[in-house]
Image 1 (tube, one colour):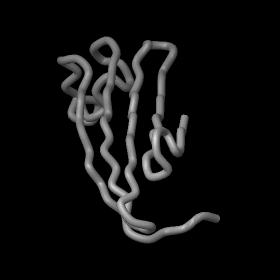
Image 2 (cartoon, one colour):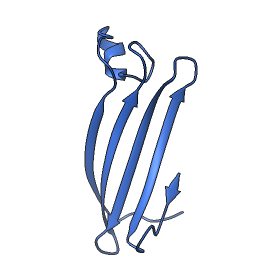
Image 3 (cartoon, helix red, strand yellow):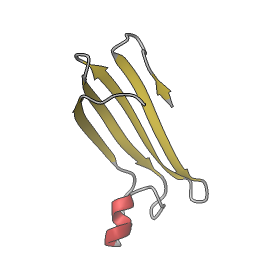
Image 4 (cartoon, helix red, strand yellow):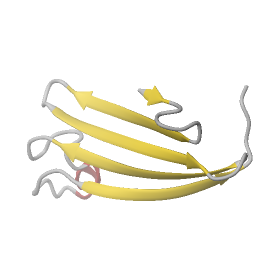
Amino acid sequence: FNWSNLFDKDLSFSTLLISNLSDLSFILSPNISFTLFEKITLTLGARITFGAEGGEFTNPAALLSGDTAGGGTLSFTLSGSIGGGSF
């Protein structure tokens, strides 16, 4: 899902949802981007995981370490980009 020009031409919102319907785990990743100048964009995002312990997307890092204890995770990101274009 992507919603450009949300409230202003310089503000946009996007989200990504990945799910496993077998174990009801999923990752939700919403982002909001703000264009400061023509070619400079700042993006604030989050990554939220949900599901039962041991679910595929509940805590993906735990699958590598073998530690499946605990529940979902929450993390935040802040990124910037300069330049770029459309194809």
